Image 1 (cartoon, rainbow, N blue to C red):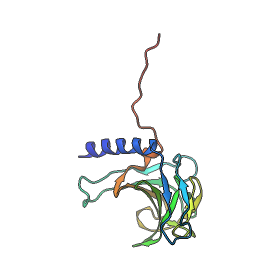
Image 2: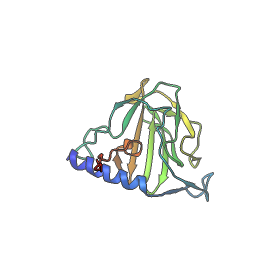
Image 3: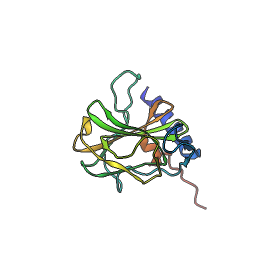
Image 4: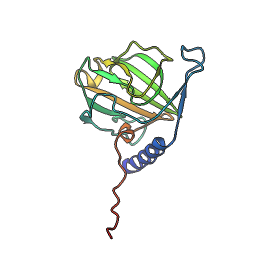
Length: 173
């Protein structure tokens, strides 16, 4: 099942990177009527952070698994939008502050634990500061958890950053 999931994530990730998308704010929000074009994806932390725990989806949706990646970070560290979009959620979920960005075309980024002063409907561009690493949950004091969903299904967010296509050697004449 993990092989099928990995292959599906690779295909979806490739399509996602090649397809242009836009995000639209919900009606009645501060950004209603505005459109935010999406573009290239970036790390949500400065530089190239270490991946402490990779994407490890469960065999079945209801089983335990790691539905994102944990990036090395510290409380108070700046967190940025990995791609353009519209903030669709800012608040607490159980024991941690969470920020969700809707990138359009069914793509949603979740970042936790992130403290933010943004409001739902805020338009963000790739690289814009969206908050700082807070405390709570399994990343408490050591990392940022980055989740990515496509039409409700979690996929590996590193597919947006790293080129995982196989290398092709061309003949030398």
